[in-house]
Image (cartoon, rainbow, N blue to C red):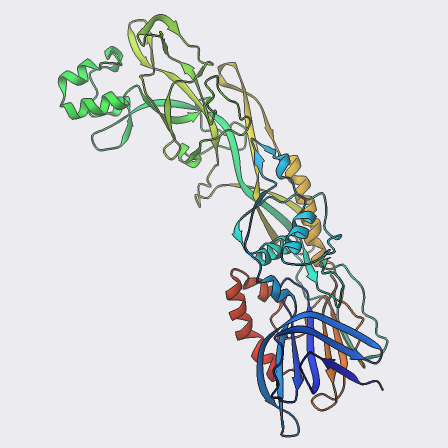
Length: 549
């Protein structure tokens, strides 16, 4: 029978190794056993596994730890722990990027990058040459906003969100992106033991893709308000300093307020009365959502308003952008600043007078009074504000989101929810004269198409295939991890620590309980230092103590 052998530069008398190859972005370990020696061992190099005429090279391994362990003959062995070249990825600089973003409801063409290209760029950035990313789609364009994020974390997030992972390979083989649940089967030729079980993963009834908070663009009816002495905004009729009738109160001078009250109340009135307007209802005067999706309990559910429009990035004649629009009926002014005697705007006319937008309170504050004259009485301007906003749930006060459901297993129950917060539903309401709703447009069709792609990627993880563990009589160094083969463990021994050399491989499961699972490693991905601490506390000591289990 051929003899198994493992070598590493500078190791004079190797006795064998244990190497479990797993999927993912984080490095696997090789525990190499050798006779203690006085000569220095390089901290970086290639590990070569040999059995007969078959050889596998684990390139560019990093030394991680060393300890002395007892062997079966009451002697001692040196256990050297190495990490594969994915450890080099942790040394990469942080990355930033803003890809597949939307502006005014449309995807910015210059920032459009496919999922395949994003992953390929990240792998090249961490030092991989010609990575195999062919399993990824060129038709998926995930919106990402990376602000000094580590590329390993960015890779892990992208791949796990879409149901993919990474297989490292040996020698000069490129790192390969694999789709979980898709891959080869395990042969039972030369098997010492084979065990098949039912896939233990619970299948949900529905895969639900939850997008970011839904954005609406609609028009609101505004009411005139003023700031009262208790520092609260109130309708004009409810102000403590109101005159007998606002109808006779000239908006520029407010003579009755000035003559009948203290100067402090007049100053409040002069700054806010006829100048401050607050959302009261939608343009039709009700709390009914303009798209017919329901009725709000109060306008508070729309706050804060957003200082942006979804349908346009138009520029006014003076060169300023239009983050919101105001329409309405009010008295216009001559070029000298004096009130025009006969000129009034119509209710559908857009007003571009200087004003301040306060989205937190849903208010507009103008520099000059907004009013019109009805016969011989003064009236606050009839104004309407158009802007964007989200609708907050009346129960938990959190913005409502659009979701797309795909049935996976009608005989089961529950959901596998996939958050995809970087893209949101955008609904724009169109109006005809008199601010009457004439229609709506949204991007639901595009979101649904994306939901189909996301659900298809996730569904492959729930394919009902039997999990399997096979232990072979001899090393199978030609075996490779893929989307179905999740772990392969090679034990190479000269017969002193282990009975012989052999390989174990698993289908649709991870069998080596002495190391962290892929999910555990992903859970520790928030910081690279956190990952190093977590893996040293979890997998490393148990692996060295129980490497022959």
